[in-house]
Image (cartoon, rainbow, N blue to C red; front, side, top):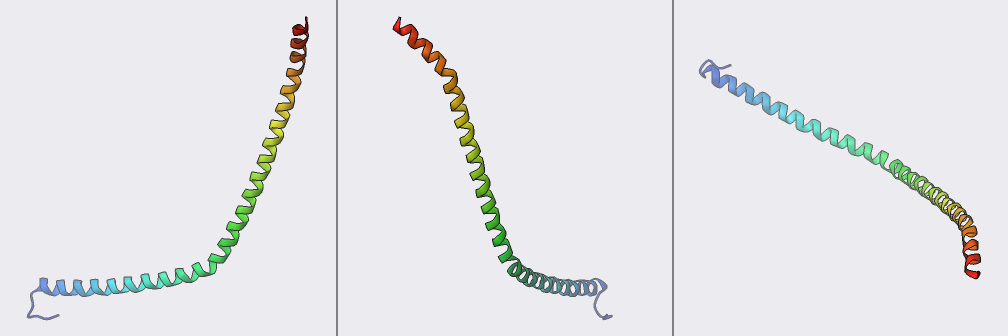
Length: 98
């Protein structure tokens, strides 16, 4: 350190140089991380797409299954309702004839 400059000024200079050095190091580190992340993304991306397709298929299958179940249920309910109503209708017809 220079003896001509005051201590505060010398300290400020050292702090500034240290700050600049850390800033540069941080910037380069970020760049390296970004580059590495891009490489990884390229390797992983195709696998992700196939997973999405598989998920889509399974969801389609599940939807198909649930719709089939629902259709069966409604058919069953309709059958039961018709069976319940049939005797009532017959009774009404008999009354109407009298």
